[in-house]
Length: 300
Image (cartoon, rainbow, N blue to C red; front, side, top):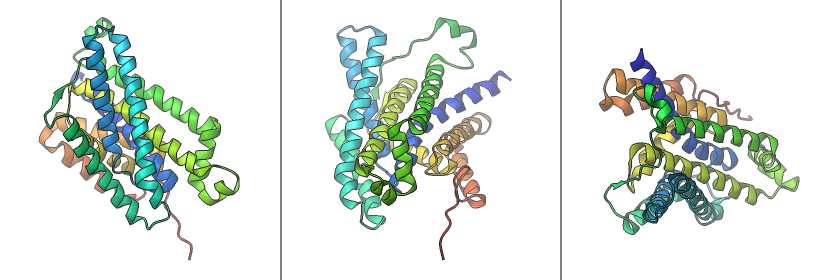
């Protein structure tokens, strides 16, 4: 039974990380209908920013809590700046172009950011500092769930609640929902759609940066290519739950994380990705719009 609970906690942790990244995909798609393939690289840049800041602060002897807070803030600000810049340079000029054009631009931006970090940093894996210590009160259950897992689950839960309040209870959240429903009507009602789209990219990038910090602390190493696989998995989670749906992205991420965890634990880690993507194919065959997605109705 302990082994089952251990796999359950591991799956929830994976799902929580995927959810933080998947929200960026689904929010952007919900607003402008674009699959932002560069989003995984924003996550990677967040991890590298946290690594650089944490390393410098460790050298200067800062307390661990201050290192975590400052590294997290730096990662959020820097990644948000990248997300905003990418939207302005690569997507805004193509807003009225055919849908294939921004998609190709997104793939190009993803490759550019990967190679930019490769040249600016190193092609090797770098050891990430241990930012989350082992909590003494968790020692009796340390064989089931670790301190890092607990911090990831709590942080993700708090962020999800804050995001829900932002979307449903604030002026900018209402403007985002209005833009997602009908961009032209939102403009006629006086909503600055360009600012809302930029804000969506900034929020999604900030969430990805938090994910980058947490998963780097959990795994213990980073590399310029970590954003590719994490981005593909998060995109899979967003599609699984119903791309464009925020609750769907969270549900899809948790389902994906649990599937990978149990497949790794009871079958083999070699088939982890096979089970994850097979599940996606099966669900899309029977429910093409995803678990919580709404089927599009076409006017005739």
